[in-house]
Length: 240
Length: 292
Image (cartoon, rainbow over all chains, first blue to last red; front, side):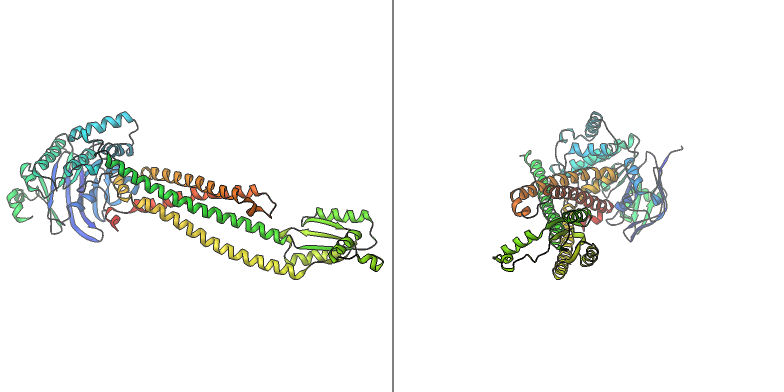
């Protein structure tokens, strides 16, 4: 099957400022894949995701995301890259000065949507996907963590992105809510979106096993290339 | 209860803009006063220097026609501001009044000469020009003698120069401080929204799109600040006009207009410029750098 490559890193290194976090990364991710990134705290899961949406520069090696070369991306092209991907942040990063509706319509207006009725319709649509329609007039700080997480997911899918990067989306949620959030991602994945999800929530992986990238000891290993690690129990013991 | 919270936040947010507006208005008032002082200082120094007069003592046997011709030639030149012809009789009368007794009766004749008193434009009152002009006037056949107070001229020029220099240094310093104060005010406003700016970038907003509302608000800030500052200045000028303009009978309206325009322009320029600079700084920063 000839699938489209959406992310390709070759011999890439991830730096957080001057500190080398992960080196010699070689991965290819195809359209429609569901991928976990796991690893202990501080092993570079977040830095890897930040590198993929150009928040951290790619200093070493080559990286291509949705046709953009990460190592040479120009400042003014970064917004264009980010418009093609949805990012779900660990710390939500909602615009704290405006309500949910304004948070979502900001993204649409900033990415060139002009017509008020279209914007409103799209906002309602994504809120419905995450089941948060009644909360649209609330301020972000009035929502619980799980609710904010859903809003962030809604925001991430506004522009119908090809890739969704999620950094510990179930990090501080109760098991039930985690499951709901995971179901949301699975649904989005089934619609054809590539999902890359950093997590240390193994219950999630157990429920929905998939290709897994493991960050450990400054390296990134791929469960598909190293079949011995595909056994989840092994993985739990040996790597994390 | 649920309705209260956002309102409170909005109110607090609005308050910070009002505080900044008050800040900028007050600083612009000071800037306006400074420019007022500077403009007037020039006029005042001109006024003082134009008090330096030259007296041309005329030859005794001149015909009236020739004196009138000389006066005309002088007043047509570009260095003479005003001329005043004093004939023998007037001179005698003025001197008598000054002395308090009629000396012509006592002497039996009038020993004074006719003269023309000249007031020069400020630009021609420095010592060099005065010397050159003296030479020039002495070459006129009608002129017997040229008289002016050399020391007074030098003294006035020297003092005017010193005071102007001091004023220039002080106002330069003050302008610098005012710029800094407005810049700080705006920096604080934007600093308080640095995380929002960063998040906007993360969701794919371009830099220019993020800048737009900030620049628009700073235009309002500069504009409203300028209007308020001008209102304060104008009412100040209105209530103190006699004290301010009392002894300078020039085009007051022109000065006021210059001050008003200066305040307006500076309000816009400073607030836009600092918003631009500060915004660019925060647009460049990475998320992790926002905590410092």
